[in-house]
Length: 104
Image 1 (cartoon, rainbow, N blue to C red):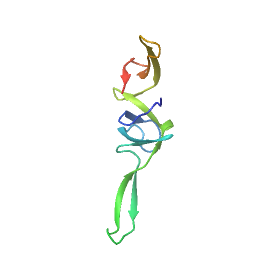
Image 2: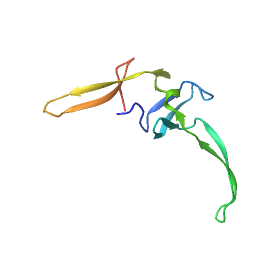
Image 3: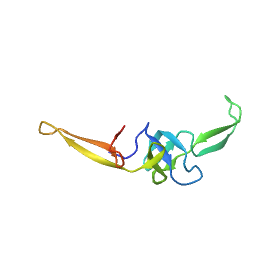
Image 4: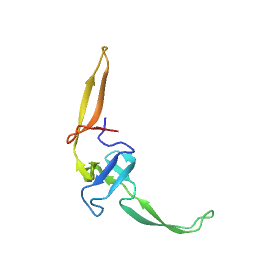
């Protein structure tokens, strides 16, 4: 299980977009795309179907620059393994270290 999943609420902890909060829209290995963060201007060349244009694109951010957010502040998370009845019943979940609330 990975620390970050699509739909998680995160805060940027370093870089030009520091302290911005957004939702993860995509996870690509060790990078994540966060909505409204790390926006780049891309110039598209004209094609036979579409004219050339200037568009704004969200670029990926490394996961070391991102942290889960709780009440507007960055929090660390831990993994908790819950065991139940039955031989193979175990469930691994992500939990905030500060408050103990489940994430996701």
